[in-house]
Image: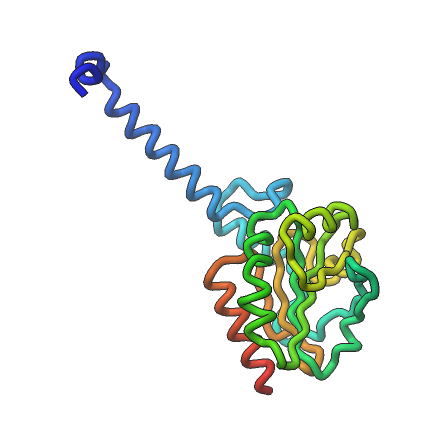
Length: 200
């Protein structure tokens, strides 16, 4: 410590304070920055939220747009054929950290928790090739079915940008809940929306 003090230059304390302020600003920016950085706004969190809202094409109470997606391991599913069940639609991508966080919660926090109920979970990879998704699933060891939307045909019925996007569709085929992004609060809200939809 004595050696460090002897070599300490004047003005180093303000420099350390400046570096700390910059570090805090970077952390805050990472937390609140939109997921699709290629189209991210640089004018702050409020503008980012406005941008997310403007890219959202469906809202609670709307009839969920129909789509058909292919399963990674073969077969497929059409949303309208699931009427009478509650459906969790989750659009994600392998490169997206919040998406990976949601997927890591999917088995135990959603599929296992609601096992035996009328819940169907559709994790849909947005805009990625089968090979990319297959490598990711093999690496992570996930055993639940995942689906492919390589040309984003299904996704663009729900939004024009930003993932992850979670949509809870009720038994009547109507949107019960929509979320963009993923954290503990969103996880709780998804849980509550599913529980409520199953009870109706």
